[in-house]
Image (spheres, rainbow, N blue to C red):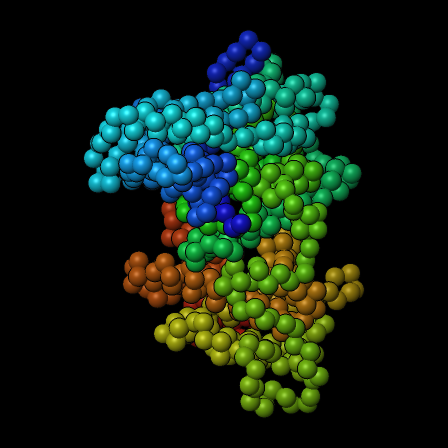
Length: 605
């Protein structure tokens, strides 16, 4: 059965926190469920007949019966749950195998119910507090003795429907326990204190509240200073960020693939932004503290409002799993905010447990960090599915033959430029050769047709200026007597400085380093994506009527991620980023006039 999942869930607006108690703080973790989850419970526990019907009474003689169908669940007045069902009541007097004085009534039964937490704190039950019979035109109709007969069967059956949270509570307790340091004395107690506290019907949905007890913060507690990590801690750091990246990628792909195009694009933004955050964390001169904790909390703060406000349709799990996942992520966020003294941690085990609250069958293989190209990632970003390294054998003067393959680069040029670090007397020849390669990658992008012709001149200079800004048109440098691909401290590689953390699974990381043509094509594709799907789509060229602002906006995204689109015109941009954008803008203005001659500035020319 393919269930509607994220459509079934809406987040509570803000996490309810902080009711101080003797033993510490009581944290409330609310989650608001769409009423569809109650509808699912009705379908699974009561409406089991043909076409989703429920025969609540039959005398077995085909004379007296009561059939319910088409249940609808909504919020009623004063915190009540309102359930309406179509009803067909047939009655008469059975006598001698016949049904005397038969009658039939059809209409709608309305029940008003109150949600309650069971005594063991694991189940939501519903108590019928009022009911009515509505005729076919929804006006109130009370057929006397018939109504008493009907409600005698309907009330007990509808009141017996429950929504169970025992498995969810078990998973949440395990997650919270494992997310707390093993040496914390209160670790088990905090996890076991998790309980289902309340359930209330609202206009938005059924709001359930979990509660969690935490020990009080010591009066003299202050955050521990963040020391530079040891070698062993750095190894653990690497394992932690890889686990985080794999988890975030798995989660967002799973959410995005069945979603509508606009929502897919927004989720793609969140993934790329999360990877840019990871890139920045990896580039830090001194790695301190817990990297994954901050990355998770920052990404969740962007993802949570999106899931709250969007209508998503995901197959493959029950709605209760997503409710558990939301509660789990909220619990981790709340714990970090309200009880920092507990020392929340997010390692591979915690992330695996979190993933399994959403998808219990997810395997370790699915959560594995991998650099192999994933077609789903390319599809998520709207990129062509086929993007392979050119392996055609190089032939002499092949660049003079018209090329028919779109978005490929002449292998002869790649072979010539591979390992070439130009001496001063080779500079003109080197830059001329590299210009041919860059121009060929641009021509390939023209053949793909993604960039509208009206903006292609901007795109051409954008590519050339970006390659100048990033590496001075170089793929290789010489260090300690050895020629090697350019690699930044942030993990950006080659001519176009394609970041291997941001773009893993989208490009071949080995080809980015060793094949300058592949690197150029990847940079072209990324710039075309950002130009068309970000700068043009969001009309950066119309803000002050300057079409060249498209290049400035596109480079800002290329450099910093989707959130940086407007930084070139923002007064709040840091001086460091302003300097980067200013340097690019100067190069962009010059490259169209002077071409490769301008790039000589990098080499003292």
